[in-house]
Image (cartoon, rainbow, N blue to C red; front, side, top):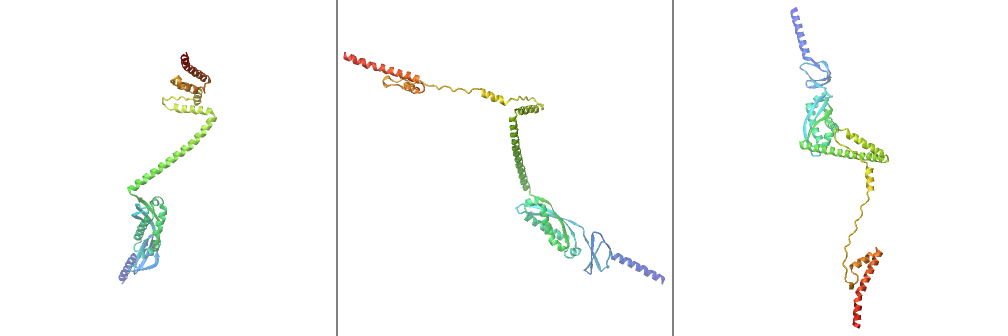
Length: 319
């Protein structure tokens, strides 16, 4: 009798151990447990720690509550300004409602991944290339909103979405590099022109000060000589005052104009009156009265000599 009781106790203890082993479950700190009894979800969500279920009746489903990092494969699309790009991103999300994450969707990880890829292609088509390269914060917010809207019903909360990389064609990269180089050259020229303008203002002020104080120019010349002499070369600088050049320029008289050459005009016959030479002398009389008087006397003598022979011929005829 005692042996039978001992055997029954041992069998009962063994059965209890087997039952406890089959019913005992441990839920980790970052997990939550859902119990399905005959396929029906129990309302109670098992927290972290030790818990038990009914063996062969209940089934415990553990749900990870940690933030999940989900990489989004690179998606190729055409931007609004007709540029082909490849964009990849990463999504950070976590489960906030274990029951909805298990019951409402078959695989919430796969669902979030597909929704992220679709939203990323939609963002590429709605954005310009400049926005993808420089205004990523706004695009990240828009992408997060597009993914989070359907994920709310799945018991999933989108924590953050980041665009990782934007791949451009090689031709577009070269074009952008040339554009950036041209823009930098333009800015360099503007800066140089601004520097020249400021330097011209300063030089004008310096020239005004030196004009008031001539000794400042001499000090500037001496400073230039010191700067040249500091280098190890054979250059010899001899400052020459500009005032001396101006003095010598004023001292030299202007060159005299050469007198115009006049060719003598041929004299005409006495019977025809004064020739070209006499006419030229008459014109010159306006400038020189003495020369005009001599020219007129000569012309009168010539007329008297020319008129004598006709009178002698008439006297001979009379005789």
